[in-house]
Image (cartoon, rainbow, N blue to C red; front, side):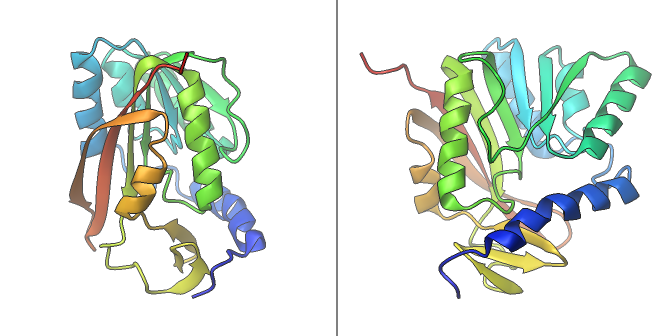
Length: 223
């Protein structure tokens, strides 16, 4: 397996996702994921108010977060996905702020702008380990001290890990989509500046996909 990812292949993923979402307006279905329902319960228990969703897709989990009473900002690099979220929010009378952004760049939000951050399978997309570290540092920046980050990712126990086209850095391509499979060591790497509250593995989909859900609390800045 190549140790150095081909950046041109990774960069092309944005256009692949955009065309896919354009051609299928309900690619992920309309029901919330189990991970979103668990995050909603966690956020409610801690009386969070503002939530940033990274990689919101077409709003499968965005609308349930808004229905639960959180002030939600949905971020994604797919304009087709964000447009779908806006239409669904308008049709259901919900308020959702949308923000087009590429998570490989600094997040366009102020320091400490959110109480919580949620992301379902964005982190295991075509992002290199250095890009993931930079992204998590940005998540920490836009969370208030004590705020919660909940994310999910496919793991190295998944049936697709080690299969398909090797793209380096524990990434493999299947059906045109590149997946970065997470090890326990990578989860620990990405926790810098956070306390890991819990992590648990679960299955989703027909394969089934093997995922991990990680909940972390943003630590205060050092004096």
